[in-house]
Image 1 (cartoon, rainbow, N blue to C red):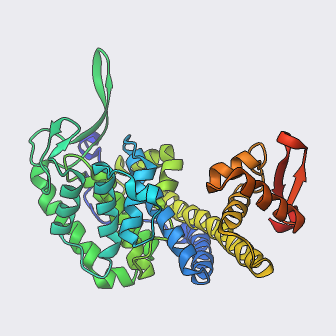
Image 2: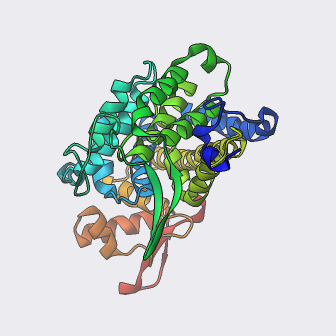
Image 3: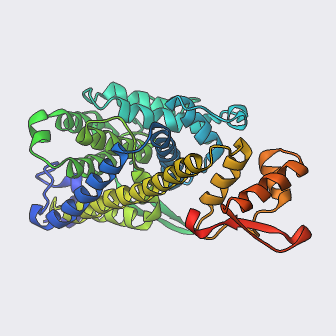
Length: 386
């Protein structure tokens, strides 16, 4: 048999019938589900303000990370401001003045649409809309591309590493453009098959959907971002919720070498066994849930601190509460250089006399520990209060 003929997975005789070892996956899936369950349990007990802040953080992380994976840098302040608008969260005056960044808006359009449509069947029209949203000016950098439609160019769609003075190293070659429509119809039909969906673990389904999409590579550009959005849609369908509580792309970014290596390994074989890829993907979902769990515990601790301080000292001024919250956020390392009168003024905008008076009262109430003298006086949270 000519081995070169069966170089890529989509050239296998039984494509696209993926195989995986369910028994080998079971421990990893169990761990991911435990992490997911703990995350959802803690989320159900969060106050609305903390839940909103959590979702804002995850939206921003997802947008920034999915762009980073493709070598694109988004401004976090712009992303957070846009995400806050979409989530209906109250923004600071500084956030409201943040200029909208087209690339951030485009990325958020896609990740918002992916989870918002979890109750609807996937359609090619939706995929086209996502793609058009990513490239609103019809260009990838300075190159004009076909947007809102599958690629049509006759040249092979290849992932390559250029080499100076030598032929490029071809890491992967996708199906020919003429075959993309039929290949994508198979994927969309599989994704919408309710019977298959009911009989497959939702995380495994998300892993297969992403691999399948990346194997076809149906668009001229943006395949990675749309493929990850497709995973997000599958995971939203698994949890039956449009709430974004964790960022899978952030965890992919943290192990991007593993991401590319496992995608390459799964795509460049003809046995259709993708157990290794699914195992890696499940592990990323677990880590995403654990990362969110850690963030929620921090949020819960901050909420308990805030409520406890307010109950014990209802006489606190807004500026005192603001500084206490700032100091709490810096734990356990503490505020760099300690809190001083000058820093208090800079943070709160009050006068120096008011800052000195309010810091003195916080120390008298036993909330802050004071060290040093004169201009060297510094304040820190009393350990028992943090």
